[in-house]
Amino acid sequence: MHLNSDFSAVLVIWTLTFAALLVLLVVLMGRDRARRFPWFTSSIVLVTLDMLGKRLLHGRLSQITLAAIFITLADLVVIVGLMVLLEMARHAFGKVRTTVWIVGNLVMVAVGGVVLAAWGPWPAWNTLTADSPLAVLGMMQLAEIKGDLLVNVLTVELGLLVVLFGRRFHAGWRSHTQQIMIGLSTVAIAQLALQGVQQVFIATVVIKAQADVDRAREFLRNLSNANGVVYLAVLLWWIVCLWNDEPAAADTLAEIPAETGVVEAAAETAGGAMEEEQKSEL
Picture 1 (cartoon, rainbow, N blue to C red):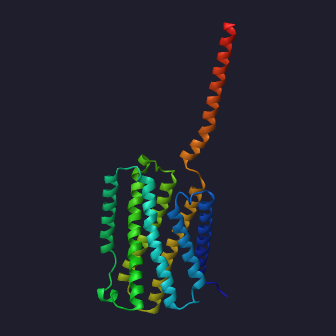
Picture 2 (picture 1 turned 135 degrees about the vertical axis):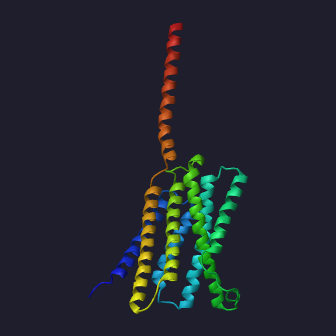
């Protein structure tokens, strides 16, 4: 019996990704990063539940029920993703002036809105306003698709700002805030590239026979696998970075004993000088 290589690749990537998510959660909890980044931790929990749920529930429930569960979960992931961006922005630029904060947010949202309006097709209005359970699911799925696109665009924008200006506001290269944003931006760029290539490929591919269909499906599967490998690499990046302490925290801990030693030495020197002075007076 020959093993299907594509299925093996998908299974290996899924297994490694799920294991990396669990390890990342252990690091976030064990190294006390979850308290500092609660929304980021929540997003990792949701992704883990989504992966596990799709693996366990596939083929065991009706298609409508599965669609309702996972579209709802996907919408929740989008909402939490927006909260993650607010959390990262607060950590990176929490000390900027209020006017600069507001103007920056408005510019980012405006750019995201333009991309959202121009990228991808929009369904007809009558299909969105139809009074049926399928129409409701369609509306929720549209919100998930467009919301995920908006989150990816905003993530790339914020990641660029953090890399360029984060050092001025104590979010430098080795800070956890910038390391998380680098990972989020990498995932967002990979997803945007995947969506763009898929749209161009589907619009330009010519199907004349079953062999063309098979080649198209294989190409799209390879793209999805490549995107999965990128996400796995980002998870490993987060595990390593979040396990280590930030340089500022490590330096502070290292300086406490040194400063204490200096104070004690100074006190001993002053005490010795006072004793010598008293002896000379006697």
